[in-house]
Length: 117
Image (cartoon, rainbow, N blue to C red; front, side):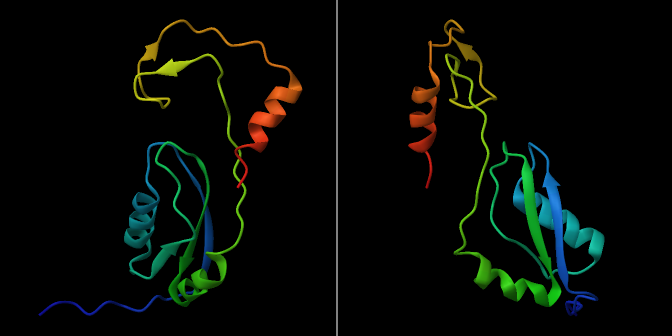
């Protein structure tokens, strides 16, 4: 006879600093295992290569995800100009010379503003 899922002994939120190389689902699974219950969800997926804040909701607090999902979020990114890899991410093999173009602050600001949204 299959075991009936146990209700969460507590409700709330925890904030995790997600390390690079782990998926958001990896973190949720680990917390489910450690906490001993399944009612764990997250407020947005981070790419496996990304690091940063991953908010987890536990127990009845998982119902609050509907109020958060449409909210604006802010991300911080770092760029390395003049560098390319064969996979177009930080894990690939470097391709070509590592020469950054000459950029002024106005060009950088324009580049950054084009990526807001």
